[in-house]
Image (cartoon, rainbow over all chains, first blue to last red; front, side, top):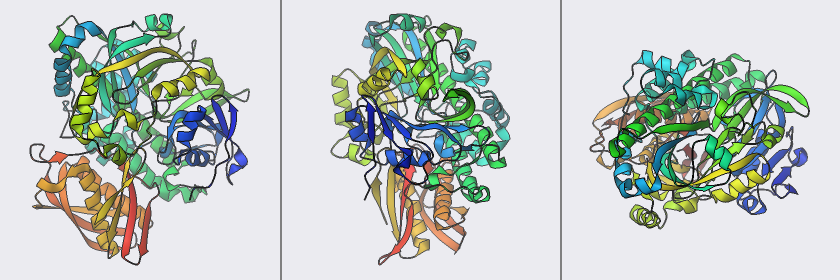
Length: 480
Length: 136
């Protein structure tokens, strides 16, 4: 059914789909991948989706696809596109339903040797203190007025209300708060849906994982992040929960109806978009920023409860400091050099991470010489990586890089022939303890359902978009 | 009446109905059965579900999004659905269920949203069918 897409190999890690491959494409698609990953990528609709993105009005540079790319809704997951700030469009599909889904990595003052004997206890404590939210409300009770503050102030709200330390916000992308968030642009239903979910992880591929630093590839950068081999870290992967999902749903409905007014047609309804400076575009961006702030507050609150769990198991002397927090579903106004010209753009990162290089003005002083930490979780039971942004990302990918391993297998295929107990036992044999609120949460996220994260990392490292700092491997997982 | 469809990252379903009304009812049941196990849900209370949409596809997506809001936003466990009134562009119906109780109700997957991805609402010899993908 699917027609052959013309893909040219540029070099070992780059492929191109030329703009004349389909009517309506305004620019080329550049895919970062190895030949082997490319074979997987060709099997689903992700390349067609990256071509559809190349058709959006106002796209600047190329439609970019990272090596973890897989089929999404509208945009592929692992897709990046910059739109001209003056004349371009904003597309909720370029951000996704989980606005500011992201990753936070916390280093503990514990070693794997100290944690190992108590790993069951720690996993159980975290499971009690950090709910996934499948069964009900989260641990934080806020009223509508407090929610408004969360939407405007993000991580800063959490820190000021006792859910963290000032240093935490500093080590969060954008200080954990996007300016110009518009709480009034978030519907009453989005607020109603999200309010009780603050402080919950969610389900699907979201999780909290206890990890140990397995390999250090860049000693200096690892030192700047305060980590060394054998040290225990905790990775938190989640987003804006029902609040962000509802905001995206609401605005897709508005935009679907409004597009006609602006004379925009798109090849896929899920790509609905409007001019950035239209009333609908401005309202969406205000609501999206508010949702992003909710997500940062959410991860900050979760870190707070993680701190509590660590202290209950290991005593009050345990430290849990934030290494960094990055978002991988977002649209941000940034300035980039495109074809030698400085351009004001709206960068859509859908399943992609910002990757600013050393010396960038937006980095905390601690990372001035290393570059921005990029946190790439693997699948349940496989390695995760810490990278740092490199100069290549600014030249080629509007300061962006991959965000994960990328799925290979559908959820139903992953469940087939597996039961949760067997999967749990197989992981335990590898020394990984898993607790899940649901049975399907375990079988659907089996490691075999994902691409090899090491291969994904190798591509971005070789392409010069980011550099390897350390590889982490899991000891315990908590999921929805 | 429905069956589950595959998607690399997420999940979908094909729902069927003799009439468009029936199709909307079975699509809502499919959605809810992915989010929770309807087995222990008592259909003792009625909840109104209303939606509008510029065409059939938008109407179905908005109807299902309302059902999802009732579940994830209002924490209502649902089991059966009835469409009471349908005109082009508008649908009104009710869901039968009860407030979600974590002690009795078994949640399966958190559904984030109903998408337009490869959405189809069509008629064949057997009646109406719809393919719908959910972001989970």
